[in-house]
Image 1 (cartoon, rainbow, N blue to C red):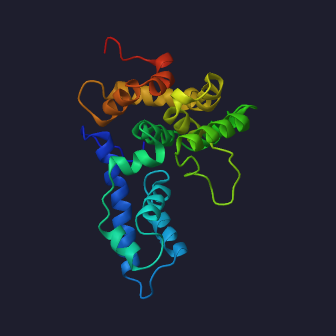
Image 2: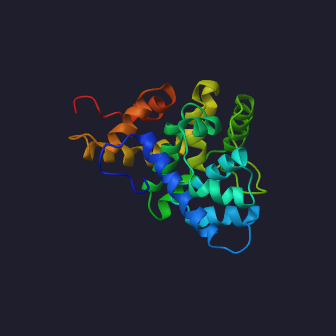
Length: 231
Protein backbone atom coordinates (compact mmCIF):
# COMPACT_ATOMS: atom_id res chain seq x y z
CA UNK A 1 0.00 0.00 0.00
CA UNK A 2 1.36 3.40 -0.88
CA UNK A 3 3.12 4.95 2.08
CA UNK A 4 0.73 3.58 4.67
CA UNK A 5 1.30 5.12 8.11
CA UNK A 6 2.67 3.13 11.02
CA UNK A 7 0.24 4.62 13.53
CA UNK A 8 -3.50 4.10 13.84
CA UNK A 9 -4.77 7.19 12.04
CA UNK A 10 -8.34 6.63 10.79
CA UNK A 11 -8.30 5.28 7.26
CA UNK A 12 -10.75 7.82 5.85
CA UNK A 13 -8.76 10.69 7.38
CA UNK A 14 -5.50 9.40 5.93
CA UNK A 15 -6.92 9.06 2.42
CA UNK A 16 -8.42 12.55 2.53
CA UNK A 17 -5.12 13.97 3.76
CA UNK A 18 -3.22 12.32 0.90
CA UNK A 19 -5.65 13.75 -1.65
CA UNK A 20 -5.54 17.22 -0.07
CA UNK A 21 -1.74 17.19 -0.14
CA UNK A 22 -1.79 16.59 -3.89
CA UNK A 23 -4.38 19.34 -4.39
CA UNK A 24 -2.42 21.88 -2.34
CA UNK A 25 0.88 21.13 -4.10
CA UNK A 26 -0.77 21.37 -7.52
CA UNK A 27 -2.40 24.64 -6.50
CA UNK A 28 0.94 26.14 -5.49
CA UNK A 29 2.48 25.00 -8.76
CA UNK A 30 -0.33 26.63 -10.73
CA UNK A 31 -0.12 29.82 -8.66
CA UNK A 32 3.49 30.28 -9.76
CA UNK A 33 2.45 30.51 -13.41
CA UNK A 34 1.88 33.85 -15.13
CA UNK A 35 -1.15 32.75 -17.14
CA UNK A 36 -4.46 31.45 -15.82
CA UNK A 37 -4.59 27.67 -16.17
CA UNK A 38 -6.57 25.83 -18.79
CA UNK A 39 -8.20 22.50 -18.06
CA UNK A 40 -5.27 20.65 -19.60
CA UNK A 41 -2.76 22.54 -17.45
CA UNK A 42 -4.80 21.83 -14.30
CA UNK A 43 -5.12 18.09 -14.94
CA UNK A 44 -1.43 17.87 -15.85
CA UNK A 45 -0.40 19.58 -12.61
CA UNK A 46 -2.55 17.17 -10.61
CA UNK A 47 -1.10 14.17 -12.43
CA UNK A 48 2.46 15.34 -11.76
CA UNK A 49 1.78 15.69 -8.03
CA UNK A 50 -0.17 12.42 -7.79
CA UNK A 51 0.75 10.03 -4.98
CA UNK A 52 -2.24 7.81 -4.19
CA UNK A 53 -3.60 5.72 -7.10
CA UNK A 54 -5.94 7.83 -9.25
CA UNK A 55 -6.03 10.69 -6.73
CA UNK A 56 -5.64 13.22 -9.55
CA UNK A 57 -8.78 11.87 -11.21
CA UNK A 58 -10.76 12.09 -7.98
CA UNK A 59 -9.61 15.66 -7.35
CA UNK A 60 -10.47 16.57 -10.94
CA UNK A 61 -14.07 15.45 -10.41
CA UNK A 62 -14.35 17.36 -7.13
CA UNK A 63 -13.02 20.47 -8.86
CA UNK A 64 -15.42 20.00 -11.75
CA UNK A 65 -18.34 19.94 -9.33
CA UNK A 66 -17.16 22.91 -7.26
CA UNK A 67 -15.61 25.53 -9.56
CA UNK A 68 -14.92 23.98 -12.94
CA UNK A 69 -11.49 23.16 -14.38
CA UNK A 70 -9.94 26.43 -15.53
CA UNK A 71 -9.16 29.91 -14.34
CA UNK A 72 -8.15 31.56 -11.07
CA UNK A 73 -11.00 29.93 -9.14
CA UNK A 74 -9.35 26.54 -9.70
CA UNK A 75 -6.02 27.77 -8.33
CA UNK A 76 -7.67 29.22 -5.24
CA UNK A 77 -9.74 26.10 -4.66
CA UNK A 78 -6.77 23.75 -4.95
CA UNK A 79 -4.53 25.78 -2.64
CA UNK A 80 -7.05 25.56 0.19
CA UNK A 81 -8.92 22.42 -0.79
CA UNK A 82 -10.57 20.42 1.97
CA UNK A 83 -12.05 17.10 0.91
CA UNK A 84 -14.91 15.55 2.85
CA UNK A 85 -16.17 12.00 3.21
CA UNK A 86 -19.29 13.15 1.37
CA UNK A 87 -17.19 14.30 -1.61
CA UNK A 88 -15.69 10.85 -1.96
CA UNK A 89 -18.91 9.03 -1.21
CA UNK A 90 -20.66 10.96 -3.98
CA UNK A 91 -18.12 9.66 -6.48
CA UNK A 92 -17.55 6.08 -5.32
CA UNK A 93 -20.45 5.30 -2.99
CA UNK A 94 -20.70 4.56 0.74
CA UNK A 95 -17.95 1.90 0.53
CA UNK A 96 -15.42 4.37 -0.83
CA UNK A 97 -12.85 3.67 1.91
CA UNK A 98 -12.80 -0.04 1.16
CA UNK A 99 -12.84 0.53 -2.58
CA UNK A 100 -9.91 2.93 -2.54
CA UNK A 101 -7.81 0.81 -0.20
CA UNK A 102 -8.44 -2.33 -2.28
CA UNK A 103 -7.18 -0.40 -5.31
CA UNK A 104 -4.15 0.91 -3.43
CA UNK A 105 -3.30 -2.49 -1.97
CA UNK A 106 -2.51 -3.73 -5.45
CA UNK A 107 0.73 -1.77 -5.07
CA UNK A 108 1.87 -4.40 -2.60
CA UNK A 109 2.76 -6.31 -5.75
CA UNK A 110 6.23 -5.77 -7.14
CA UNK A 111 7.61 -5.75 -10.66
CA UNK A 112 6.23 -8.48 -12.87
CA UNK A 113 3.61 -9.37 -10.26
CA UNK A 114 1.56 -6.30 -11.14
CA UNK A 115 1.49 -7.32 -14.79
CA UNK A 116 0.56 -10.84 -13.80
CA UNK A 117 -2.43 -9.45 -11.91
CA UNK A 118 -3.93 -8.27 -15.19
CA UNK A 119 -2.96 -11.50 -16.91
CA UNK A 120 -5.26 -13.34 -14.48
CA UNK A 121 -8.36 -11.61 -15.83
CA UNK A 122 -10.63 -14.29 -17.23
CA UNK A 123 -12.44 -14.55 -20.55
CA UNK A 124 -15.59 -13.12 -18.95
CA UNK A 125 -13.83 -9.98 -17.72
CA UNK A 126 -15.07 -7.56 -20.37
CA UNK A 127 -18.70 -8.63 -19.93
CA UNK A 128 -18.45 -8.44 -16.12
CA UNK A 129 -16.80 -5.00 -16.11
CA UNK A 130 -19.37 -3.66 -18.59
CA UNK A 131 -22.16 -5.04 -16.43
CA UNK A 132 -20.65 -3.45 -13.31
CA UNK A 133 -20.29 -0.12 -15.14
CA UNK A 134 -23.99 -0.21 -15.95
CA UNK A 135 -24.73 -0.80 -12.28
CA UNK A 136 -22.51 2.13 -11.37
CA UNK A 137 -24.37 4.35 -13.81
CA UNK A 138 -27.72 3.32 -12.36
CA UNK A 139 -26.46 4.17 -8.85
CA UNK A 140 -25.18 7.57 -9.93
CA UNK A 141 -21.56 6.67 -9.19
CA UNK A 142 -18.61 7.99 -11.17
CA UNK A 143 -17.86 4.49 -12.41
CA UNK A 144 -15.59 5.81 -15.18
CA UNK A 145 -13.49 7.92 -12.84
CA UNK A 146 -10.40 5.80 -13.45
CA UNK A 147 -10.91 5.15 -17.16
CA UNK A 148 -8.17 6.45 -19.41
CA UNK A 149 -9.25 9.32 -21.60
CA UNK A 150 -10.73 7.98 -24.83
CA UNK A 151 -10.29 4.36 -23.77
CA UNK A 152 -12.99 1.73 -23.83
CA UNK A 153 -14.06 0.29 -20.49
CA UNK A 154 -11.54 -2.49 -20.13
CA UNK A 155 -10.89 -2.26 -16.42
CA UNK A 156 -7.54 -3.30 -15.03
CA UNK A 157 -7.64 -6.00 -12.35
CA UNK A 158 -7.14 -3.55 -9.47
CA UNK A 159 -9.95 -1.32 -10.70
CA UNK A 160 -12.27 -4.29 -11.17
CA UNK A 161 -11.75 -5.45 -7.60
CA UNK A 162 -12.18 -1.93 -6.22
CA UNK A 163 -15.48 -1.32 -7.99
CA UNK A 164 -16.72 -4.82 -7.19
CA UNK A 165 -16.23 -4.12 -3.48
CA UNK A 166 -17.88 -0.71 -3.82
CA UNK A 167 -20.98 -2.19 -5.48
CA UNK A 168 -21.07 -5.71 -4.04
CA UNK A 169 -24.68 -5.64 -2.90
CA UNK A 170 -25.80 -4.60 -6.39
CA UNK A 171 -23.75 -6.99 -8.53
CA UNK A 172 -24.56 -10.48 -9.69
CA UNK A 173 -22.50 -13.06 -7.84
CA UNK A 174 -20.68 -14.26 -10.94
CA UNK A 175 -19.68 -10.69 -11.85
CA UNK A 176 -18.30 -10.06 -8.37
CA UNK A 177 -16.31 -13.30 -8.51
CA UNK A 178 -14.93 -12.49 -11.97
CA UNK A 179 -13.85 -8.99 -10.99
CA UNK A 180 -12.20 -9.98 -7.72
CA UNK A 181 -10.55 -13.28 -8.74
CA UNK A 182 -7.15 -11.81 -9.77
CA UNK A 183 -6.97 -9.62 -6.65
CA UNK A 184 -7.87 -12.55 -4.40
CA UNK A 185 -5.19 -14.72 -6.00
CA UNK A 186 -2.26 -12.32 -5.79
CA UNK A 187 -3.00 -9.35 -3.53
CA UNK A 188 -5.00 -10.88 -0.71
CA UNK A 189 -2.21 -13.18 0.55
CA UNK A 190 0.18 -10.25 0.76
CA UNK A 191 -2.34 -8.06 2.56
CA UNK A 192 -3.24 -10.79 5.06
CA UNK A 193 0.46 -11.29 5.77
CA UNK A 194 0.90 -7.55 6.26
CA UNK A 195 -1.99 -7.59 8.70
CA UNK A 196 -0.53 -10.54 10.60
CA UNK A 197 2.82 -8.77 10.84
CA UNK A 198 1.06 -5.82 12.51
CA UNK A 199 -1.55 -7.74 14.51
CA UNK A 200 0.12 -7.24 17.89
CA UNK A 201 -0.61 -3.50 18.04
CA UNK A 202 -3.17 -0.96 16.87
CA UNK A 203 -2.25 -0.01 13.32
CA UNK A 204 -3.48 1.53 10.11
CA UNK A 205 -3.35 -1.88 8.42
CA UNK A 206 -5.57 -3.36 11.13
CA UNK A 207 -8.08 -0.58 10.56
CA UNK A 208 -8.14 -1.34 6.84
CA UNK A 209 -8.74 -4.99 7.69
CA UNK A 210 -11.58 -4.08 10.02
CA UNK A 211 -13.10 -1.76 7.41
CA UNK A 212 -13.13 -4.55 4.84
CA UNK A 213 -14.59 -7.04 7.30
CA UNK A 214 -17.38 -4.62 8.25
CA UNK A 215 -19.45 -5.21 5.11
CA UNK A 216 -20.26 -8.01 2.71
CA UNK A 217 -18.06 -6.96 -0.21
CA UNK A 218 -14.90 -6.57 1.84
CA UNK A 219 -15.58 -9.71 3.83
CA UNK A 220 -16.10 -11.67 0.62
CA UNK A 221 -12.61 -10.92 -0.69
CA UNK A 222 -10.93 -11.70 2.64
CA UNK A 223 -12.97 -14.56 4.11
CA UNK A 224 -11.25 -17.49 2.39
CA UNK A 225 -7.91 -16.32 3.75
CA UNK A 226 -9.22 -14.95 7.04
CA UNK A 227 -6.55 -15.63 9.65
CA UNK A 228 -7.67 -13.13 12.22
CA UNK A 229 -9.40 -15.67 14.46
CA UNK A 230 -7.21 -16.57 17.45
CA UNK A 231 -4.78 -13.71 16.78
